[in-house]
Every structure is written in C-alpha cells, then in structure tokens.
Amino acid sequence: MTEDQILSEFRGCNALLEGHFELSSGRHSAHYLQCARVLMNPQRAARLAIALAQKLPREISSAVDIVVSPAMGGLIIGHEMGRALEKDAMFLERPDGEFHLRRGFALEPGAKVLMVEDVVTTGLSSREAIAAVAREGGEVIAEIALVDRSGGEADLGVPFVPLIGINFPSYAPDEIPEELAAVPITKPGSRK
Image 1 (cartoon, one colour):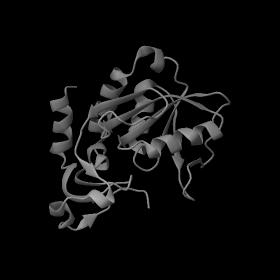
Image 2: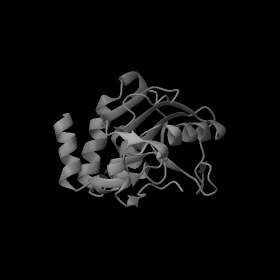
Image 3: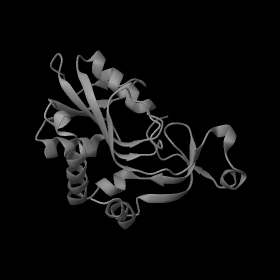
C-alpha cells in the first residue's frame, strides 16, 4: 500500500480526528489517530495487516514464533498480524498498571516474539510490553506498528517497522500552544 492509500483508509472511516487530545504518552496534540475505527472493519484490518507483514524483513518474519500485542490498542492488529503470518497471537493486559499475560496465555521459554502495536508515539508502552515479554520468558525480535508518531525517534531496543510514519506535532504539558490550550481536552487513549 502507498502512503496515500493508507491515509485514505484512515480518512475513509473518520479515524483521523482533530481537536485537543492528551495522548497515552501524556503529550498533547491537535490530531489523533483512532486506530480502533480503522480496524473495526475486518476487511480493512486484514488489508492493513497484510501490508504491514509485507514490510517486515524476511529474516524477521521467518524467525517469529508468536505474535504478542498490548491491549487494548494492539489487540485487533495483533490478531490480524497473527493471521497474516500464520502464527498464534496473544495479548498483554495491564490490570495493575504493569503488563502481564493473563487468560491462560503463556510463552514457551525463548519464544521469538513479534510485538505489534497500533500507534507508537514515545515508545514507552512498547518498551513496557517488551519488558513484560522478557519477564514471561520470551524474546521480542522486532516490533511493528500501524503508525509511527515519533518522527523516527522512538528507541525500542529492537528493530521497528511501522506501516506509516505520521509526524503530527505533539507537546509536553508545559509546552502546549495557546490556541491548542483553548480547546477542551479529550483523552482517547487507554492509559490512565
């Protein structure tokens, strides 16, 4: 898929929002990508996962034993990546503020894991999820995401392959421009 085709998928389902958003990272932005909306259509989610799988280098895709994603945002695209790569997919949850495998999910010792996210902004959630996989006995060999909002700056400690990089400005809480501060804040992310 081309960048225009990918953006068209987001625009076509009103997944590209404008306003004042507090992102999961704590930063603020006038734009938000609601990946849940772009992924709510199974055919669209499958198309995006296939496009993402095609971007993954063969040496990585051939080494993957299992796909893991953090809930909630990565759950659907993680499942679709499992389908695209013909691998099982499981997800991490954060019931107490720290990621864990639950619901009977377990990794084989040394399992080679592909981490799948919807959006990466600072990489904090990704690094927490990667650390959780290590605690569970697996090894994250790469991470993929639908969207890289970091401007290529996110350091995850593993190879990172996004479907698209979108560089909407984001601001620390003490750097919010006046015009954005005048707009009521919406916090659409899953982190408290």
